[in-house]
Length: 235
Ligand code: UDP
Image 1: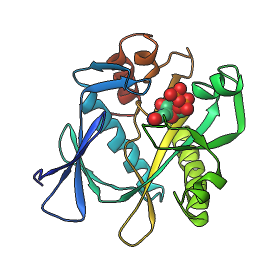
Image 2 (image 1 turned 90 degrees about the horizontal axis):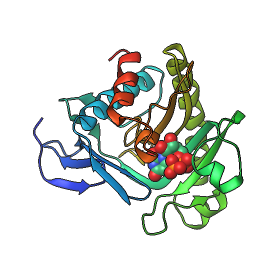
Image 3 (image 1 turned 180 degrees about the horizontal axis):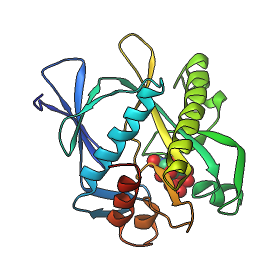
């Protein structure tokens, strides 16, 4: 499958058309960004790792009955996906307190959320992705009530599948972000990527942070963490 016209370029990926009007190619870049794009760096090799980790995770989800946009990994840096109309909502699931919820509500990092917490954010660079509630989603027409229900249920199911998967590989799934899109038949699929850029992953034994927090807070070599994750999950 060859790359056609560039459709969109984001901070970490580029989306290309293909000869098939129903399919896109996602190209994973080597750029690392954090804090709303204020912190930036080129990390050679990050695109390949994120593409490989994300592909592996999508394959696990598909096997477990989760509908995603993933078709196949077509090269080191590229993934073939179904075209989907993205919702402007980010869904975050938290098993353990870390990141923005500590700043926002005063939780101590490491506090356990049982049952896991589901949060919605409005995907808007201009407004810095604010936290929103279901009423906002309805008011702003970001998704239907049924879609909100599906996003919540799917996010929790993804959490169960991935928590168990990472746990058996010695990694704690602390939190993660999902995005959803509408396929041509109107149904929802998990889109974007699921990688150490969008998940917090801690070594189960040592508590070492293996995800993008290494870059956010200068905790150590970013790729070393991503490589450890990839190796542990069977890459
Ligand atoms: N996350 C993401 N993209 C975003 C915001 C958050 O992938 O635009 C991920 C983040 O990596 C973490 C989880 O969602 O795994 C929860 O992020 P949080 O709300 O704590 O925000 P952060 O402090 O990471 O910006």
